Image 1 (cartoon, each protein chain N blue to C red):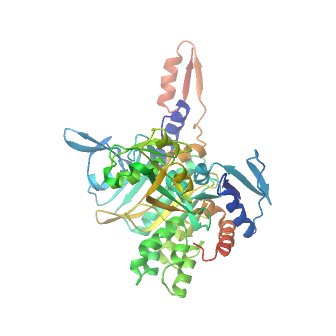
Image 2 (image 1 turned 60 degrees about the vertical axis):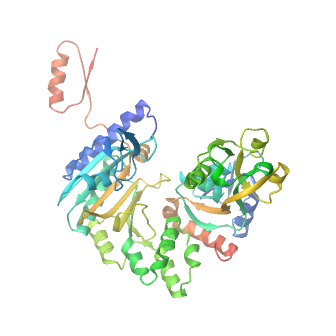
Image 3 (image 1 turned 30 degrees about the horizontal axis):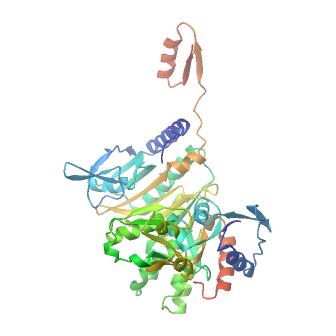
Length: 293
Length: 205
């Protein structure tokens, strides 16, 4: 994210701390990854460099690193860190991955983790839109040759691209309905079940939701706040070495502008002889202190 | 809603198509950059900045596809608009035209640094890109560059400066841009606007 001024750096750390606490409360364990990975085509992003006739990547995308580095049947992981994408300016991300459970259940849990993570930052006004790749796969059965154009139409939200295709009017009408579907009631059982499990009025089904990453399998989601012009983050369902997995990543820069992180408990100010002894005692009990000169 | 419209060659067409769609926006005064109509706000910005404004929170904008490509902004593009048609091309001095593969080491003057870089990189030709903000046609004349990448409408400006169009890089047209979040939070308003403009445009593309 470029150079951080000191105030941003401190705020970033506070946001990270609040998120870390929430992820841990849900039972997720932190993954700490090295800065540099040997280059491999399966790793996405990162900034490439050569050293001793070998190619390496600095801070590539975390999910693709987890997929390459670990072989686990079941796990709940989280990370907070910077990722690079070919240049020198990094993006700070926080994300979780739930691996090896039942997909609908994992999605409901991960969405709940996401919601409480935002709430822990004082962000209450946000929405999550759910989309489904499977709905579009079914709708494009028999017209597979046009999937690429339809996908492009969704990414740009340009229905004109679909209108130009040699499809019958009934098909185009079906596409138009899907393209513009946004609500809380859906015929697609999996999404309906997720809505039911999560049970929160901030979640919608928006079948026009798309995520640009290639590894998603079906359910995808995007989280956003009306106060910010860009998504705060998103995620979805993918395959972790053949096992179902669901994860999300949050853009910490976006969160910095929205977060209202408050210190828990009031700070005790101490002064004079014995104040350091007293401060040590308070800190060991978890009380914030400041020793004044 | 908040609109951002481009100052310059696309402004007239933008106001015209919005008016036909029922959004009667008066052209803000010469120095006034923000206007209002029916509770909506209209900003005037440099054409190159329109996609950036839309990406970062302005609901709707109109910009050329060249500018959007150059900025690489993450926005929705629901409609192509039937004005601002031109092309982005590579041009060279008439007396020193060479095949593209012989352009290694050439200096290319352009406002479109990102597009030019990606174009030559795909060709596998190493060039030096010189970023200029305007009057790019002058660069070969004064020896600052060997070729240019710029917008061509009629070709008149190129000819007047002794340049010839060698290769078209992309077709350009005005486009309606929508902020990704506004599309969700102002779903009905934005869809009404898109459908109204689509009606004016005809086949929608």
